[in-house]
Length: 196
Image 1 (tube, rainbow, N blue to C red):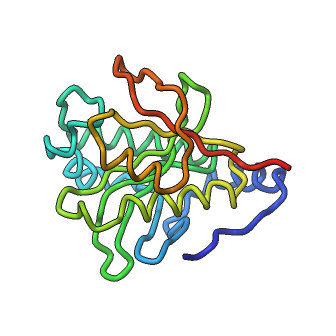
Image 2: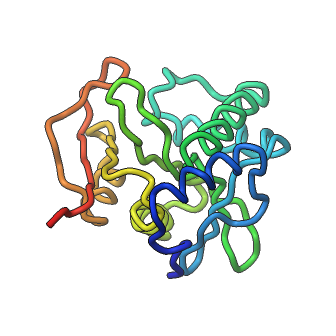
């Protein structure tokens, strides 16, 4: 797996994020062995809406059964692009490096309720069971700290989503007290920088 830009002084990252507010990259932000992570572009709205139009895939995402329209997907992309410009992270478009196939999304959003970055991922159902969620989550966790974006992040999953809970445990996240998200008590995890 490749490294990001490496460890740079925090002030440099802040300056880079201010510059990035005007220039959001079209290229991969980071990569893993099989995956490429890039910022969603406005023209990705149909693809994102398609990802979130599978009721089986959506049942764990707190959307109350709502399937995404292209307009809703476009509004989420605009929000994620603002988050990238302001914070240096986002929910990224996930593609397979070998053929460029769209696999889903994975990345960080800012959880306003808890005041911290939150890791999340959604993989297209046809790609489940191939280890992409674990590979994406593990790479993003390392990238987050390599880029010194913050000193901790959280993740949560509805308890019935055993596969997602297993991914969070497998990448080394520490289980914390359950968080209530949209009225649902969730299995909750955090990962932080070890300070010594």
